[in-house]
Image 1 (spheres, helix red, strand yellow):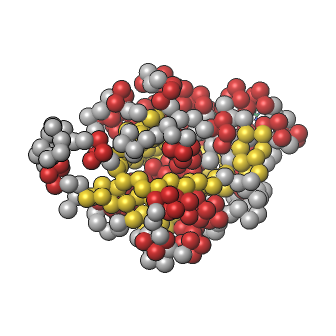
Image 2 (spheres, helix red, strand yellow):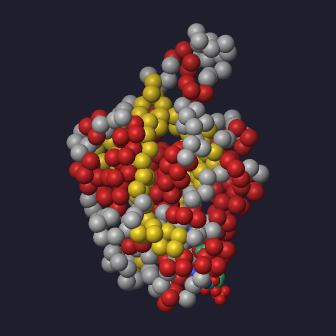
Image 3 (tube, rainbow, N blue to C red):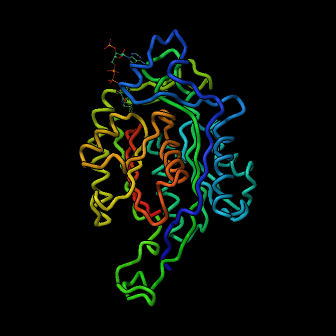
Length: 341
Ligand code: UT7
């Protein structure tokens, strides 16, 4: 049997506290103008003490399950992408499991920093394709505000907190359709869009030679007392458009698609200038691009699912449409995927 991982529901959680650029502490000596010009960010959400990574993830997960009409007991696996777990161990996904009562699931975290969501999607998709799980809760959740150095204006203004979750369900590819034989209710041997729903491909990359470009320094005082972010933003910026471009090209080629076939481009939301660079490189129409970095800032592994949530909820992304996602982050890691929604 051949299975596809189809999106059955999506949910999200944003912290109650929204910090606008103009609300940032005076000691940072930054400005709304600098942050907007260099990044496109106007605000970010920051978690309070109650809003742990697991709490946000669990709330997003409950909403996604409700949208999908799936009970927590039906979940076979929880795959949580995060670089800000509540603890070194156990995995934050196990806390989420307890919070939502997914007692039949196995649960673990995936750590690939800003590429984490695409990596976790790939892991979840492979469990489904292998027949090892039928229903997977795929979550991206971060409390970046707990690991940034609130004395470093070069990093703390860039990040935000939040979570979003997708319910992925195994759908058996109709044998008739998968073999390309004419279906009784179609006039063509071409697969109907609705029959081709699901994760079409994932491409994952890493280059450990970039390890020191973005990492945690354990000597820095941060709210979670586990060290703070050090980033060589300029170097990462330089490789971002190139590496993302290569991953996007691989995804398109693997599916025999062109940019014109893509309905929605949902990039990792780190910096509007990086997104613009990719848009320009591929001559993508801006109306096909989902941008949320202005409102959420960089929420690392949560940024793509939060953007997906927004575009699905406001009616832009519709069932059957082709969605291209990509990310790049610490490691270095980068990745792309194409989903027929
Ligand atoms: O998602 C994970 C991967 N991360 C990324 O994709 C981040 C990629 N990098 C970037 O987005 C950009 O490099 C940044 C937004 C981080 C920085 O933009 P930049 O144009 O590369 O600025 P810069 O770091 O070269 O700094 C330029 C100037 C410096 O001042 P001097 O040395 O020229 O006097 C900084 O000190 O801007 C200064 N600066 C600030 N000024 C006001 C840095 N941060 C701030 C700030 N407010 N918040």
